[in-house]
Structures are given as structure tokens and as C-alpha cells.
Image 1 (spheres, rainbow, N blue to C red):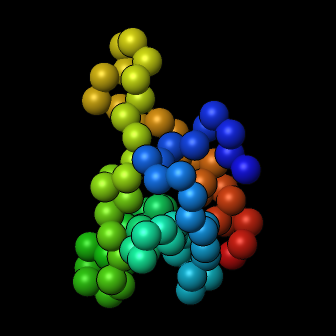
Image 2: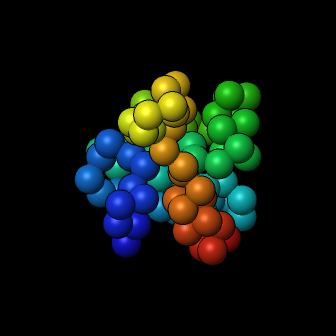
Length: 82
């Protein structure tokens, strides 16, 4: 679905919207927090999400050291489900 814009190190999974605003990605038995609202709930201990940075791919383009590939397509797909 995402083609060359795929920002994650896992080959597949399911994008979901939970609670009307939490965009999450489910893969390998884990539920990853994708957007800021889901990450905030994770950090506050309100949800048992895993940090998406565990599977978020680094941007390998020259001059982009330390940056990640844009995760916006995943967030947008999840928000369409909300």
C-alpha cells in the first residue's frame, strides 16, 4: 500500500485508529504508538503501546544522518480510520 514510502523495518502489519485519535501499528504481537496522541498515552502509562522508534527506519539519504523516513503516510492512513 505504501510502496517506497514504507518507513518501518517490518514487512507488514495493520494500521489502526483506537479511541478516536490514537494511530497505532500492530505487528508481531506488538501495538506501536504512531502519532503523538498515542505516544503521549504510552508515556503516561495509560496504554500498553510500544515506541514506534523500535521499528522506524533511519533515512539513509546523504545529509539526513540522524533523521527517520517520514512516517506521515502511516499517520494519514490511520487518521482516515478515525
